[in-house]
Amino acid sequence: MANQEHLVLLRAGAVTWSEWRQKNPQIQPDLSAANLQGDNLRGANLYQANLTKADLSQALLVRANLNGADFSGANLEQAKLIEANLSGANLSVANLKGATLTQANLSHANFIGADLSEANLKEAAIAHAILIGTDLKDANLRSADLGAAKLIRANLAYANLIEANLIAADLSKANLYNADLIGAYLYKTDLCNANLSHTYLVSAYMLQANLSEADLTGANLSWANLQGANLAGANLTGANLIGTKLRGANLIGANLEDAIVSEVCH
Image (cartoon, rainbow, N blue to C red; front, top):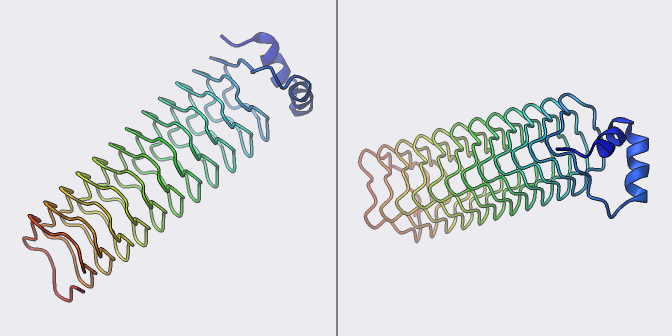
C-alpha cells in the first residue's frame, strides 16, 4: 500500500511535490497500489518511485521523470506519456494498452510480459530495452529506435515499424505477422524462427540479418537489401523478391516455392 504522506504530497500539486523531492532526495516515494486514475502528473518528478500495481490509467504523465521507477503490475492503460523519461524503469507485466508514448525515452526499460498493444510509440527511444514476450500488437513504432532491444517472442502482429531502427535487435521467435517494416533498419538483426508471414519489408535494410528458419510466407521483400543475410531453412513460399539484393545470402534449405524472383539482384 502507498505511503499516505507521500500520496498527500503528490496530490498537493507540482510545486509542493517538487520542493519535497528536492529536500528529500534520499527518500524513495512509495505510491504502490495508489489510485491515480486520470490524475494530472505532467512533468512530475517520480524518479525511482515505487508505483507497483498503481492505477495510472488515463493519467497525464507528459514529460514526467519516471527514470528508474517501478511500475511492475501497474495499470497505465491509455495514459499520456508523451516525451516522458522512463529510462531504466521496470514495467514488467504492466498494462500500457493504448498508451501514448510518442518520443518517450524507454531505453534500458524492462517490459517483460507487458501489454503495449495499440500503444503509440512513434519516434520513441527504446534502445536496449527488454521486451521479451511483450504484446505490441497493432502498436505504432514508426521511426522508433529499438537498437539492440530484446524482443524475443514478442507479439508485433500488425505493428507499424516503418523506418524503425532494429539494428542488432533480438527478434528471435517473435510474431511479426502482417507487420509493416517498409524502410526499416534490420542490420545484423536476429529474426531466427520469427513469424514474418505477409510482412511488408519493402526497401528494408537487412544486411547480415539472421532469418534462419523464419517464416516469410507471402512476405513482400521487394527492393530489400538482404546481402550476407542468413536465410537457411527459411520459408519464402510466395514471397515477393523483385529487386531484392541477395548477394552472399545463405539460402541453403530455404523454400522458394511460388516466390516471385524475377529481377532478383545478386
